Length: 491
Image (tube, rainbow, N blue to C red; front, side, top):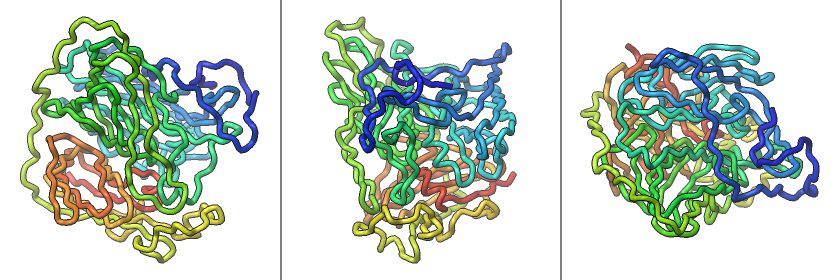
């Protein structure tokens, strides 16, 4: 299963760079579309397909084969419509490891959501089946969620895109619909992916290269005056992306849970792990328009802090020739009803501890991480919610179907934590830090929200389907080291 990301032929690790040097990834190649998973059903309104999680090989750099994990040999896109019935036959082709498919952000039944309590054994198979309700059109994604293995399986490549289309789409079709899946990669001189370090466990694994659809800084040709609909997915384990488009203007039209009520023009955008955004980008100047990263301080423990600023993720080459006039973006996209008054208020406090140290002692700048054991046990490193580490056999909260709740998520840790709730979308009410309260600039459906260190974020949510649901930090290493809990939603 040789998955050629660099349009380069040949097999085996020929022309291997000298030991200790970082492989150079090709840049500027035409942006590739991620392959669509084909529908095996001939029945209207039914989407059926087969998915297998399997070892594979990708060629990111010339002459180097990188062992990875993939779905059907790639990172596929599932596209279905509101009202459809979906049936995915899944096989776990990973040797010696259980896995699941978690349908991130999607309103699927708890027993179909790939929770860690519901693993598929190595070589095992199962069917995931669910219906896509009206109003569920959005940019979702899917990834594994097995207990203790999620972080590694995701950074090794297991992720896919799930786009649910609306019955009536207000965005003009002339804008296209381009998926940009952002991942990051760390490979050694021999092409392999190095094991995670102690720093990776503390901060979340951050790669050396940020890729778009598996490519480094791919190129996209656009006409002068063209508008493009771009769906951006942060599918990294732990990378915070503060994004800006140089020489092009950005307008937000959608978030994790689909379109917002009206377009909002922005200059920059923070996309934290697992978040998605839909943008309309207007290319009104000829020449290169680049999607670049700005610096962002999300909190970092120990040495090895990556330089996040100045990466070029994508280059749009805008021609001198103007395109025919594009239709305007509608002033109104949809209506989002407020969730209303909560019946229950819950409080979730995020903290971190290491070997008896509390979060205040954890800057650890002077410690030699190369001598530390990778084992979280040896350091007793924990990321906690309400003082507790995740236990698969424990129910942390009990809720009811249809009940509107206010969740206060308080970050008493030293770094940002993107907080994700399974099974539903929520509305952000307000953010509070140092006594200052900020309300969001627009109403939106979200399933992942960044909680800055020292901040409290209040969200309104309602679970419409019964069963156990996880809530956790989506820095996957933090989830794995305990920052996760379970709410049992009762009928």
